[in-house]
Image (cartoon, rainbow over all chains, first blue to last red; front, top):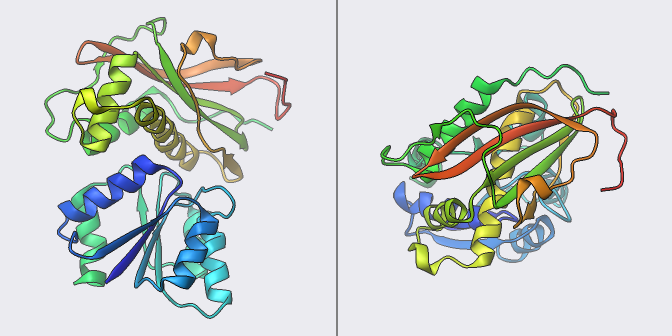
Length: 120
Length: 161
């Protein structure tokens, strides 16, 4: 599977990649986007099977990326890894078709719990 | 308008503990040891601003050595491999993580900024018209690290920094 990791923090992208490996998902094809606009472009052009996105990013926020993808008829599995987690954000994410919500800081166990059903 | 914020030192300490468990000390061998010294020195710092239901700043400050160690832990690198950019990105992410967790405890209607990093002492940071309302101060492997919250006393009024 191809997995797109979208986060404006290079450090956090590396931590997500490393945690995916620790959780046993390192064999998938991992690609990275450094802001919301790039995430939207890559999600459209490179057709990943899964998007793991930060919420707060320059140019487009994660929820805006998700909404634009859905508005364009793109139903890629999409979820958030974010340090912010308020009930309003969760509700907005679910209403837009988000599949999961992981709060930073996270562990490999949390990744396994969320991604095992998705990635097998 | 700012409200009385209900994020106290024990809440901050719990967030800090989670960051240490997840990223900085996953083996559980070098925790942040409290000093309760709010005047401890710092050499570098990062912050996020929160506006809305509460207005103020969440600040991560440490010695340069502690920041280098944090970057090495975040990026799974050797200490000597850590670059200035690694330190800067790591500090930004630390402020973002703690700030995001703080925001989640605030009443609805708070906005979180992208992180600002300043590779100079916290004392040189300018947060005009703010007062410190909470903080966790400690040493990590002998190096000072702190996380503090500064509330704006002028509701939503931006003063030139």
